[in-house]
Length: 308
Image 1 (cartoon, helix red, strand yellow):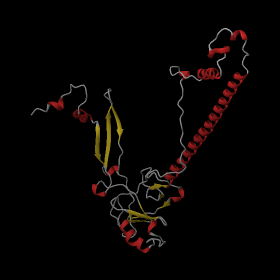
Image 2 (spheres, one colour):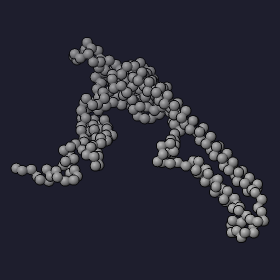
Image 3 (cartoon, helix red, strand yellow):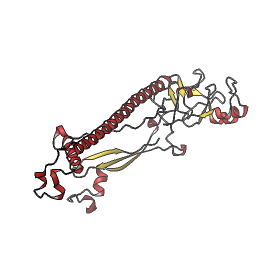
Image 4 (cartoon, one colour):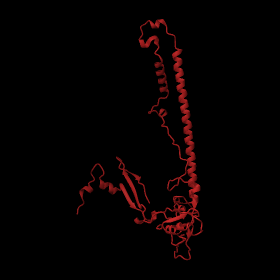
């Protein structure tokens, strides 16, 4: 059966929808698999199994070295932006003071020319000059106009000459002095981070032949995976599954491992990746938009926000 002519008609001066779809332009969607999702025991920065994990109040877990380097880099960047902002403010004050002095100098020059001009003679006044041009003296307006013209000639900008092309001033806004969490973008201080402790599974009791470290809940002894919601006690750092945390830790107001007192507000839900199943509640669809360049026949890739 022959194909439809409308889908194979390629003699038009523009790309049809079918041609764009075959070339891969437009919105492309793809479902994320398990390999594209961060496991619960991975650092949010290096995406590797964490070492000396630290947790922020929002439940994001980082390696100690990674989060320290990130916060230190943020502080250096804030310091650099503050120096640039202060230099800009200082330069603005100097420019404003210079303009004020120039305006004052122009006013004094205009006043001096008006009051110390040449004395008019009778011969010049008897030749029937125009009323506005009497005694060859035009008044203060002509002096101001001449002064402005001279200033304009000195500061004239020529866009066709490289040496006289004006530069657009770059304005630096006042930077924020607060460090932020690299994952949640909320304010984060070093003292608000707390260490967490996972209970490792006994390798003698498990049947797993892999050398990967697995963790369990210290209460129900269930192996922790991305399918299980986790909570951490910020007073001692021990991690439990959410069921045990709500059923025992929250009720007893004490940690089940070290018996250290805690309250309901001390239970911090840990953020983790999805499982690849739509019922998990995470956005597992990656979207990318490819725009076709006008007139060039080339495509400009514009990635859309991805949610995992």
